[in-house]
Figure (cartoon, rainbow, N blue to C red):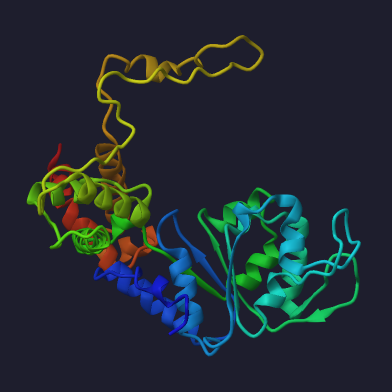
Length: 350
């Protein structure tokens, strides 16, 4: 087994959305072409990239992950392509880059949007022709590397804002894989929570895996999970650590909620003026006396409105509505079941 194989153990789920994503990953893995993974933070994009490599014909070659956002912009080019001695101040000797390290294997570029546009031109040449140049030389160097990239925003928006070369996106988009957010993976939250709880309990020496109470599971299911699987794992492990009994009834979903008094708000500086909070829009001022919705309520309202609008435009045809929303039929069915009561009430309203 490869040293990175334990990463794949985290890629777990039973929902239709997750299984469809894994099927798409397996299909893309078999073809030696670039791939682009699109998904929110914490959705397991790096795990999907590792699966792409280890289920591909390149599985015996190196798998080299690079988080571009974690590298200073000034050294990204050197890190990727290497440099010759004297290429810049401090370059005392030749150094191979990540492309050379990934030769005959896979290079995973996470947070692709953090790569400077000037460097993206060299990436395009590497994808197109399998050739790179170290800094400090114009001598081409052939590399046999499959490139898998990932972004956590719409890549088309990055192109429109000038942060991603359209030609590079065209080449990477041979296989576009959408990692589903946890809120769309219906049924996976209890399953993942139980596994995370059991694993962490064993890690800290608990004699038996803890059990999440119905109330705890309901709280987990209702949470919108902006941090997705990473956030869920942290919440569950925190609950295991702070609960001495085998049954978990309480979860801390917001670790920053102050138990005594709220922290003072951050004061923003207005443009062209002195410090102070930003002026509130008129429509917000008129609603200042009302109670704002919680995050869960706001997300539920947003998703319900999207579903209702799509179903209305599709004449009630759920398959057509799923296509309008960019969802699979099974994903839409899951959301419809979740908000059936609200959708039925809305359809009966005068």
